[in-house]
Length: 165
Image (cartoon, rainbow, N blue to C red; front, side, top):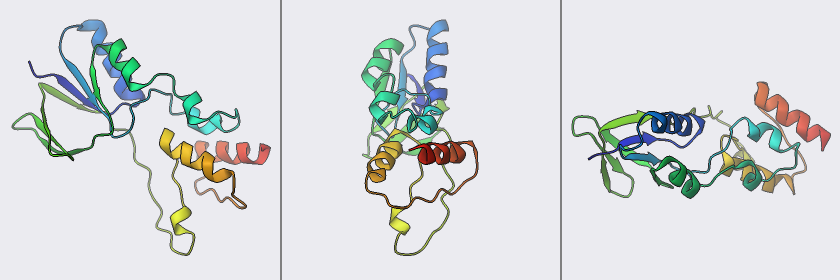
């Protein structure tokens, strides 16, 4: 039997998978993640800095633990290149194919990247997941100046955290 496939392993994807398992324990379930599939509350990224937490401390469970809990297959570090709804199949970046009974897209939001030019344009970061946060923490060690773009809640929380440091 083809599985239900959820593309994504963020809060929405894992919450959906948990709720689905409450009503159906038998249907095969697969989650596909472009990252390492760790489960964490994304809002924690903005206050992890002030709490001195590394990315490993923000993550609550790794993909293997989530797979066991959900009785699911979790495919990590894999990118879906194409969705073929007529054939109920996905084509992955590595050329492999996955067939599905039902498909759910729970990929989250992508940051809007402001086009920036200049000699420091390669140093611009967007913090949208644990890997981004890990890079951010590593770069803070040697940073002399930091500019935050975006006056939203997350930007303001990072600004407060940086000032407090």
